[in-house]
Length: 242
DNA sequence: AAATGTCCCAACCGCAATTCA
DNA sequence: ATGAATTGCGGTTGGGACATT
Image (cartoon, rainbow, N blue to C red; front, side, top):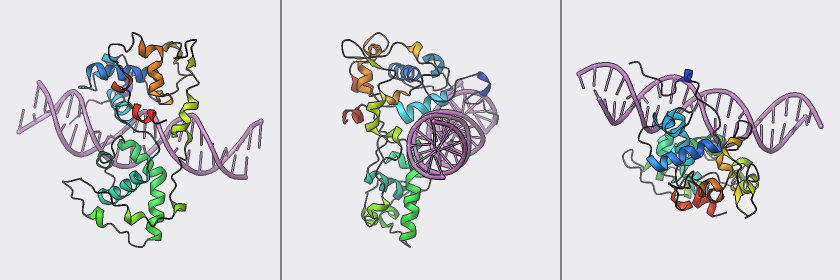
């Protein structure tokens, strides 16, 4: 069977990091029309991206309720347990961690948890997995039992975010550019024209609450879709905790 | 201060599964 | 029933940020 490529490499579509303008276009379109057809979406939304790229961006970073960084101990233990039980079925694992995407969990596993898991395995000849073993393939309801890992010494559990760019506390310092304070105290971005290749700070660098206050969000651009921040801000709840 | 190495995240790619006509 | 179109998944990689020399 010959398939039409989901992403046509010869079409000259943009690749690489998403700009705030692209994010906003995608959010506005999905909020207004949903995402019934990812293939058609970029065209309808005015994005020079392939549908696959749009879907990935939405699922991993822009959809409502998504959480970023700062994994709790419980979340990490759940990932380790489920991965031991299910293997690299990241989408299934992600389904047990509300707000986490499979991609982010996969990255977190390779960056942090794999080492810790290997260390635990080395220090504990036979991992106690009674809870995990009780998980049935057709019933992913999981009761998280932290007991098998409670013996992990604090020294082996690295709860501190090792990467600055995903640390929530750091985002507040990242909003200084390109946003700036206007005379009335609101954050202002001069215009989409400013979001060039040289100025591609991802939208995740901003607080959604702050973005809502940016003139574009309260103006005509998203006015038809936005009534209050919580109605569409993907990580609003997280930012609200700051 | 500059060069080099390492880490880690965002995004891409290929392919399998599913849906649709 | 068939094949095209679309979606979803997991592996992989490019490149920026940070650490080390």
